[in-house]
Every structure is written in C-alpha cells, then in structure tokens.
Length: 283
Image 1: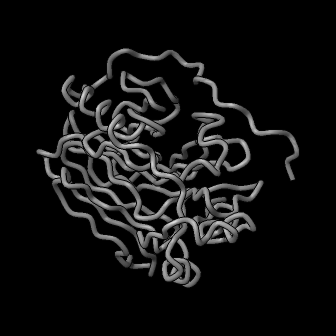
Image 2: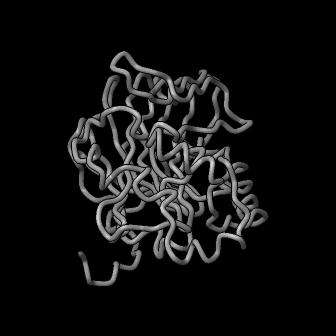
Image 3: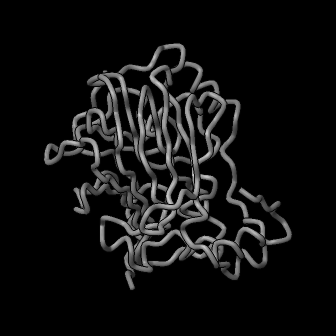
C-alpha cells in the first residue's frame, strides 16, 4: 500500500492559451458562469439512499447514467442494452445545441464513502459523430452544482479533455493547455477518463491505450468532494458512455480496482457515525 502523502495540486506545466483553438464561449456566458458559482455554493458530500446502494450492489456500474439539464437539446437514453448484452448511455444532440454539460446521476468519487488507497475510477465515451467545425464532445469530471451552459473544465472543480482540439482544462475558462499530439479522435474512437485515488491523477485513454497524466493532485482530500462524471457537448454530436455496464476498451478498467461500484456505497466507520446527520439523496 502507498505510504507517502498524496501530492498537492499544482498547475499543469504546459503552456496555457488565452483563446480556444476552434470554439469560444461568449463573454456573457463567461460572466454568467462566475455569477452562477458565486450564488450556488458547492454541495457537501452526501450519503446515497439505501435503496440506491442496494441497486449498485446488484447491477454495478450500469446504475450510472447522465442527467440532461434544461439547456440540453437532444436525447439521452440511459441503460441501453447493446448486442453483446452490455448496458450503456446513448446521447444525441442537434446542430443548434449550445455549450452544455451533462453530469452523471451518481458521483463517481463519493467523499462520504470508503476511498481505497489503490486503483481509482474510470469510464469511457465512444464517439459516433462530431459533425461540423463547431461540434464538441468533452469528457471529464465536475462537482455539483456546475453551470449547465458551460463545458467541463471551464469552471469550479471541473476537469476535462475537449475532443475537438485535444486541449485539457482544469478550472480554466480560457483556451486550455495542449495535452498530447499522439492521437487524433474520429468516428468510432473510444476515449476514456480515469482518476487515481491515491495520487489525485487524472488521465485519459484512447483506443484502449493510457495517455500521459493530464492533472495531478486534484480532488484531494477526497472527504471534501462528491465528484461526478461530466460530458460536455456543443453542436451536432452522437456518442455512447460506458460506466461499467459493458466491457471497457482499456483493459485495466475491467478489473475490480477501477470499478465505480467498488467504493461508492461502501461505508467507513466515519460515515456510519455521521449517517443520521446528513440527508440522503436518491440520484
């Protein structure tokens, strides 16, 4: 087991861009997002309803899905059964979709539950379409509440890789930072997002291959946060999200140490003691 203290967060070393490579959010949305975060305090970690915990124990990662906010223009179908029997979330947006962030219905890192010292959490997105120059899919994480009219990575406690320009963002409302020149993302590609518990490292995968670490020391200490999967969209897109209801392209993700249901719902002594003090939520 690791014995050294986890690293503290430091800014990524790559050059930070003032402007986006392809897409720019409006100044009005920039200001509205700052106001949103000012008016909506960060949610504290909470316990899941016992009925949800029971479902997680029987269905595993298939319980996770995406919730569409009011600004979403399209279709979200959770627990869609694939030909191989796996369960995924399918999303399709229209060409008039403005910047929008979809969060998972349940946290993927839950501060009130037992966080192991090894492994982490992981999920994948299979790209169907990113039609047009202004179409975006972004894959990452965020804490609630997050401004629904912003892409993940742009605001408070959110991190993401934007697949249109392959720039990475962590609380970065500007142009992001270069991530890797090793890949190009096209139709049919599978991009994954992983988070290591002990190090606070976020990384991404492409076609089953782990890419360089994107960020280090984020979302620490874990007890302070409930962290949700966050998928950003803009323009006409189509994709599938696998939270563990189907086989992952990145093979280690199929091992127990990376499953969402490994720690969410597993009480520690502290959470058992605090259980009567915190209001549970169902999703």
